Amino acid sequence: MSDIEVNDVLERLCNLLRMETRAFGQKYGLQPVQMDALTYLTQCNRYSNTPQAVAEYLGLTKGTISQSLKVLEQRGLLRKQPDKQDKRVVHLAPTAKGKKLIENAIADKSLAPALANSTKITELASVLQSTLRKVQQMNKRKAFAACHTCRFNEHSKKGYVCGLTHEPLSSQDIQLICREHEYPS
Amino acid sequence: MSDIEVNDVLERLCNLLRMETRAFGQKYGLQPVQMDALTYLTQCNRYSNTPQAVAEYLGLTKGTISQSLKVLEQRGLLRKQPDKQDKRVVHLAPTAKGKKLIENAIADKSLAPALANSTKITELASVLQSTLRKVQQMNKRKAFAACHTCRFNEHSKKGYVCGLTHEPLSSQDIQLICREHEYPS
DNA sequence: TTATTTAGTATCGATTCGATACCAAATAGG
DNA sequence: CCTATTTGGTATCGAATCGATACTAAATAA
Image (cartoon, rainbow over all chains, first blue to last red; front, side):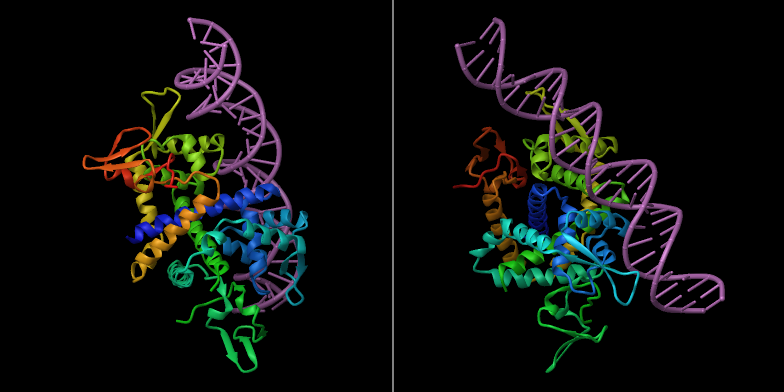
């Protein structure tokens, strides 16, 4: 088994995931990219739920993603909330309807049941995570990973604190995706 | 580690792969879907290199994919060859230029080097393959897997034979993707 | 105070994509 | 053999994505 083979299998899994995402979105009149954006917004933290962050995460321009976000807002799947401090910034909060939709989408995927019986799921997860990490370090993009693997995340007896914003983070917070994430060097 | 976590990592890897595919294609003025189609055509066998098969593989309609194929042909990345037996059928053969482009695309991906140092690559491949197989069996689409895992593939001392077409298959052939593929029950 | 940068939106043209209609060839049913 | 029906592919239309560019407003730097 070579790395080429792993690459091929991963690519095929990607295609299938995309087909399922497309098929699910079609039931609600949503495009794959809109599904992706909404999914991201249910998984990211409060520093990362802006149009710019969505654009970077998906590798598209902010102009492009702005239109998709407008559609999601019109459908009542997310709300735009102006930032208190920086008046240029808009925060994108999925509505209950939006969250429910993504929940259903994840449950609909064939992947979860396919994995359910796998005895080696722990190993699989760790190898995939280290692979993801290497890919993220190699291409020069931002990592967009969760705070608990971030070098700015500080852990003390009082709890977690982000070293960039110096704000306290809950144990839920550190599981969320952050656009400022950097791996320890 | 839960299956949800594996799902998330896989989804993120997919996003990154797609971003890289998009970025690479952009250098040649190709859309992601065109890259996907051309990649498929370099990996499929002689029964599966038709517009209809590409459409099924990518989960799009034949009308949609027909336009993408026209672009690829105009760019000199593939040639259309009418079928000898069935005059309705067209076979799509990547040109040398097209093959080279896909080779470069695969080499450009960060995934291969990210996997290169992994000691558990054999395990990873086998778990991923069984996952892929389960996903393929669960959603009702065609599998589009290689002949060597197909129930129609017959192996004797004379070599391989496809049980559907009764044509002999080389050892290269049975590594290629086939649209008629079915797993053993 | 002024220049530059940054976040977001608006708009245009090219392209994707689904739906539909259409043509030609193969197949089925009688 | 003759007429449906099915199948593979293409063409066309409208809606949507997407990149590029230009623009506004607010924050930051000089």
